[in-house]
Every structure is written in structure tokens, then in C-alpha cells.
Amino acid sequence: MRRPVSLYGLTFSLPLLIWQLLFFVFPLLFLVALSFWTVKNFVMSPDFDTVNWTTMYGRAVFWQAYGATFALAAGAAALTSILAFPCAYAIAFKLSDTARRWAVFLMVIPFFTSYLVRVYSWQIFLSDNGIINVMLGWIGLGPYPLLNTVGATMVGYLTLSFPLVVLLQLFSLVFIDRTLIEAAHNMRCGRVRTVFEVVIPSARVGLVIAALFAFILSFGDFVSPIYLGGGDPTTLSILITDTTKSGQQWPRAAVIALTMIGTLMVVAFAAVQFAYKGKTK
Image (cartoon, rainbow, N blue to C red; front, top):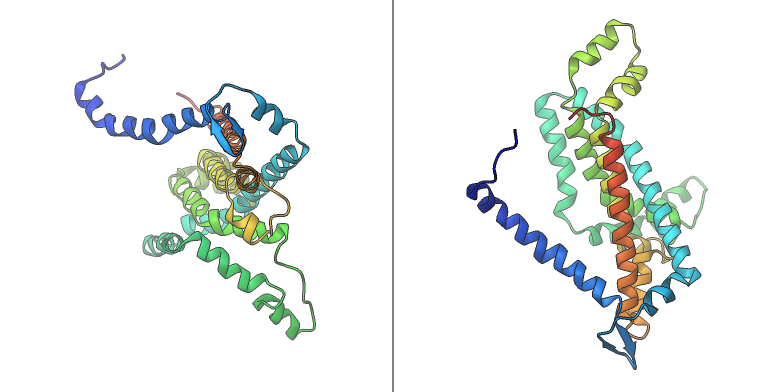
């Protein structure tokens, strides 16, 4: 039976509604309106013209940036999820409660410092005369071009999302019914097979949501592609900056931003549908 909406419930949900309206709905509506404005002589004027959409969607550089951004974000989500799972699994099943609390604390510590500072620190490691190449030189290797590469960009994406993905996976793994794992072992199911046939399916929702967060963070990131990747390949976030610098074309930048938001909404919807597929109501 459906419960009636009460004044008490509306009162406590009102701050969330106001927050969503002020910081998501209204800015999004303004962004939509801005995408139809025109720019003449470096001055924006309110209008309803689709020239910004046809111009951006008609440029090959836009679709190249879109493909590169999507591929990098998908790769970062997959790589982060794969690397984070053994860590989350060990914390959930191999550590005591006290050690698990310390592990969670250590995962939170990176968020105490600015992401930009952490990216700058990676430049010290990845530059031609950086720490990694110096250490490789001790054994007669290198120097290798590590900075301004796709690999460096992926390192930045890992720096951004790895701790969060570990925490999200961990919170999903700790709530798995341990009797299912014991039953699998009693049926002489090996550890690896138990992980793939019991643990991962049981934690599917958390694992998919963790990968989704990694994708979202990487898809919209500007810092790693520009400071570690050197701006090559061009991502949508970099393209937004270049567009605004080119004749104050904020309406065209709004087109790129709306495309990114639409893509993230589609990916998020598909991921949630997959995560809860087959779940009982």
C-alpha cells in the first residue's frame, strides 16, 4: 500500500529539492539556452539559433575529441576497477575489523590534498629527468618519454578515482553473505572460481557503481589530460577551454558541455540498469 505524502517528509526533503534546483536544474536550463545564443564581434547576444550545434557537430575535431574522451574514460574505469578489486577484496576478507578501519582511513587520506597538487607531483616522477627515469638509469635503461603521453594521463585518472573506487567496492564486498562463500567452498569450489561465480555476482551493484564513478570522474577531467598528457589527444574538457578562448565562443562551449552531460546520463542509466538487472523488487 502506498504511503501518503506527509508535511513532515516534505519538510525534510525540501533542502535536497532546493539544492537540486539551484545547482543542477537551473544551471542546466541556462546552459541549454546559452547554446542557442550567438556571438558577434566577441559579444554574446540572446538568440535562438542552431548554428552553434551545427557548427560543433559538423567539425571532425569535435568527434575526434569525443571518441578520445570516451575511450580514455572507459579505459580508466576498467583499469581502475581491475586494480582496485584485489585491494578491496583483501581489505574485506583478509583483514581484521581494526585493520579494516585503518585501511579505510588510509584510502581517505589522498582526499586531504588537492588533486592538482597530486598531479603536479606526478610530473616530478614522469619527466625525462624525473625520479623514475633516474632509477631506470641506474640499471642502464632509459630515459623513456613518460610525461605527455596517454599512459601519463591514465596515471592521473588512477590518482583521481582509485581511492574512491576501492572504497565503493569495499562497501559492497563487506555486505556479501558469507554463507554463500562457505557453501561454495563446501562444494569444493576453488578460491578463484568462488570469486568469479559468487563474490563478483553478489557485489555486482557496488562494482558497477564504482566503475561508473571512475568513468564520470575521468570523462570530465581536465587536469590530467593537460598537465600529464600534454593535451594530446584533445579531450572534450580541453576543447571547451580552447573554444572559449577562440572569440569568446561560450555558446559553442555550452554545446560541448551539454553533449558531455547527455553522454554521462546515458552511460549512468545503462550502468544502473545493468547493475540491477535481475534484482527482485
